[in-house]
Amino acid sequence: MFSEDFRLPDPWENYLQHIERTSANFWERERRYKDYVRLQNIKIWRELRSWLLTIESGLVDKDHQLTAFETFLLHAATYLYEIGFQEVDVRQSGLTEGYIASGRRILKCRMPDRGETDFGLSSLDDSTISILAKLCAAVGTLDLPSLKLSSRPEPGGFGQMVRLRYLIALLQLADLLFVKDRANEGVLYSLSPLDTANLADARLALQGYISGVDLQKEGLTLYLKIHLSDEYLDKKMYALFVEPLRVWWSYNWKWLFRDFGFFLTFQQHDTAVNREGGGPQPLSHTCWALKRYLEGNFHASDVRFPASTSDVVPIPPLSKSDVSVSATNTSGISRNNAFISCSQSDRKFLKELQTHLKPHIRKDGLHIWDETKILPGSRWKQEIEQALKETKVAVVLVSADFLASDFIADKVLPPLLAAAEREGATILPVILESCAFEDSDLVQFRPANALTDPLGMMTPGQRAILWTALAKQVRDALKMEL
Image 1 (cartoon, one colour):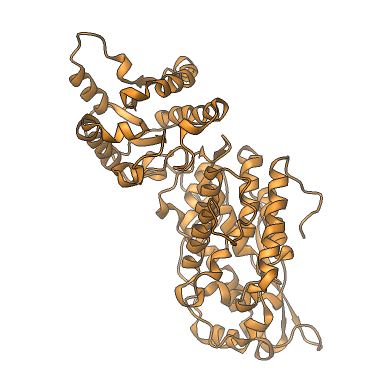
Image 2: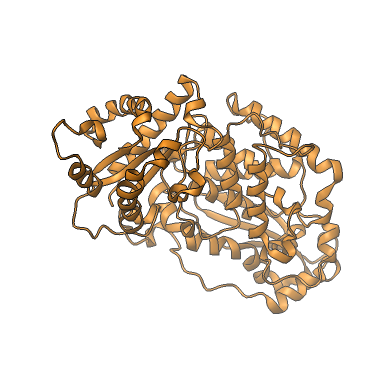
């Protein structure tokens, strides 16, 4: 059970309590969860949060503990990641679409329609809301490497850094482990037949037969309590519970173990069979659809992964292709510089960024190129072309003047976009003012700040927070091997 003693440091705890109150009001107002298998209430959300704490204490290496901000994001997501289930028919479209709808609904909280709840997110900045939307939208995608997200920290709002793919994985694991007492029994009993493609709901039908789930570094153990008449289904019930966990682990074990020292072991289950009456009712009395599903349609998938850390073949060091795009440097040119591009009219912002990069240049020997490096009388076009060829990380300061520049559009952006696509170069846009960023080729790259929160509208303190985080991101990207 969730410990009432657990508290995040402020302001995160205050934000979280506000999200809990607002979410509870939303679901209670119309008791919307009554129409769906999964219950939505404070008890459920706190149990999910309890699982997150169990995972962190049981499996997360001490060198990779979550920051207070990352913990806030994870715990806030427990209230939000299924709100989209009220906007799409997940029984028809699937859970993945439901989670994507949750992400869209969270994004609307930046500017909610009249009369719509903001789920307590109005106190957060746009970048934090965007990160929460991405976090929740990805829960239904078990194959996280397919999303091309980085395992490395990235700006996540309030000047904080976030390991987004790691957070998604932890939330997915908590969601998969939480089965007991999670479902609306009235809806469960009416399911007929169980959808073989909707394994998540089929697993929830096990809730009355799970006496406990134990998660330790030594492994995951499931405790079942079943009726004598169902003893022949014992192994299948265990297999059904671990099936999505095994699939999830087969997709993600390599990067979780390599980047975070995170490893999940599946132990044998322990089953108590009621032979003297009382206890759990037979499946034929509680959920006939589950009984038929286990007897006929359910078969465990043939997925492979190491059984223990001793079976792990040494994993190559982290490469750029593992964390961003599948790309290889085939140009023969060494890319080891950062390139900063901006319009002449935005030089004041360039100067601010240069100031924040200076400590990293001094300490880490970073190579940063911008147009102020061009000396009078030099062949400036050739210098820019050479700098572009050596670019590993590009920071583009996007404004209306930047997007209007023919030189930037014709000579600067094409080689940068090609380097990103073919060789894995990193492009980091910064939105300086309201402009046509969404209609440009740069829209495929996530900006450091929200379109609704341009740098030019920030206070000096807010700009300093953004520049500090961006400078660290440039440093980390330059150190990463292409």
